[in-house]
Length: 245
Ligand SMILES: NC(=O)c1ccc[n+]([C@@H]2O[C@H](COP(=O)([O-])OP(=O)(O)OC[C@H]3O[C@@H](n4cnc5c(N)ncnc54)[C@H](OP(=O)(O)O)[C@@H]3O)[C@@H](O)[C@H]2O)c1
Image (cartoon, rainbow, N blue to C red; front, side):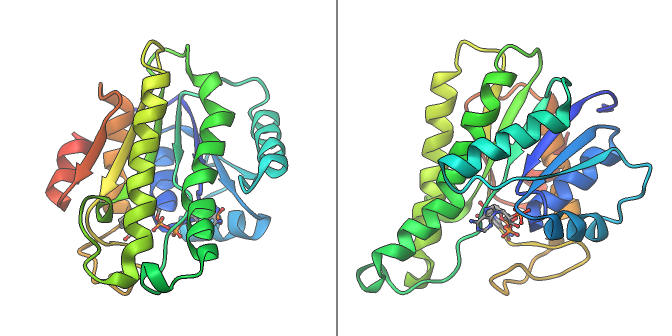
């Protein structure tokens, strides 16, 4: 299915997963508003995905770090939209890194991980969901990791377990709030390493069988699908291909 004429907002656009999602939506004909925290990351994104002047890529600078910056980010997005309605939004902010084991970690590490990978995604939902609620066929998609479902394989990965489990729970909470609305809130939970475009390792240095361009069609599959209120676990690349349809 073509996304021609559709408007998509991707928050966290310059990251590994976000950049692939932006590229694939552009390839499918959508106009993409790519939200990043700085003009430099918007420029980096343009270069990473090989954006051409004719691409329907609109860069927006916005940070969902706190109440004030989130209000400014929301204003920047709607000002860039200039009255266009949003069809699909993906919020893919944050990636948790290694930490000391839980009992040895300063509390600031956990708070930082949630600021950078949970609360900013909630700010994005607070900013965008109202505009999607009554839109036919609309979707809002969050992104988490498979660490949510397993005891951390290494104590240094515990922040990933907590942050991703919280993101999955947030998805269910947002889906419950919007159960009677048209928008479909879901979360794609990735259980394997994803490399940047053309790469073969993720940020943990984990060998990745595929890059974000191979993964991203799964997000377009969710946007045109019928899933609502689901945490969609991708256990393998085959699952990603199945979700892509
Ligand atoms: N990559 C993998 O192998 C993998 C595997 C499984 C699951 N996941 C999940 O996929 C999601 C995204 O991961 P990713 O690999 O795309 O991460 P990433 O490359 O670090 O991208 C995340 C993006 O979030 C944005 N962001 C906004 N606020 C941030 C903050 N305070 N700190 C850090 N980044 C912030 C940044 O984009 P801007 O600079 O554009 O604002 C950043 O590039 C996470 O939930 C992760 O757990 C990833």
